[in-house]
Length: 214
Image (cartoon, rainbow, N blue to C red):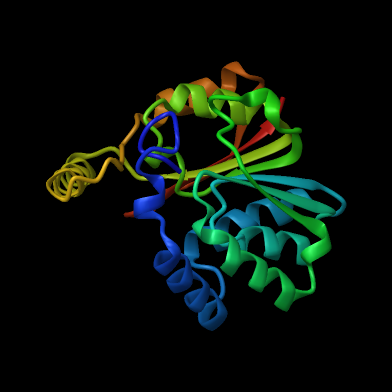
């Protein structure tokens, strides 16, 4: 996702090389731990016949796994077109091209421009968007049944890492920034939009929250 409420800074950070690295790693190792837990939560809740809306899905690895587990269709919203070639190649290899759509679209600034999904996924996305309330409110309104997202913990270490990364970006004259938003406040946004917590995982680097429609 972007470093502001538009695509500014996105293309220069999430470029084709980055996408190629992710695709190579997925081909060799499959999903990483965080993505596996996200898929596990959704599979346990039932994805058979579901429509999946992923915000900032990158190369689409989570969508591929969910489609292989019975999801009907997936739509990926992205701010950078740099992932598209690798994502389409992975879909072809999996024989899933006809069940997945990829769209360049900022749901936070234009919520009405995309259809809802039974399942909404945001993996490592909220930390790349400054206005978490706007983003999560739009995501919640598009989740008919389930929403799951991952985010970094908000502590001294994570704030230090983010500060250093943003200073490096500024030194390189890049516009992209990352953020450590308050977890309780993020969950509160989702609950105000009719979702209730159903799953939580805490690890050193990434936290996961799964919610269902109340």
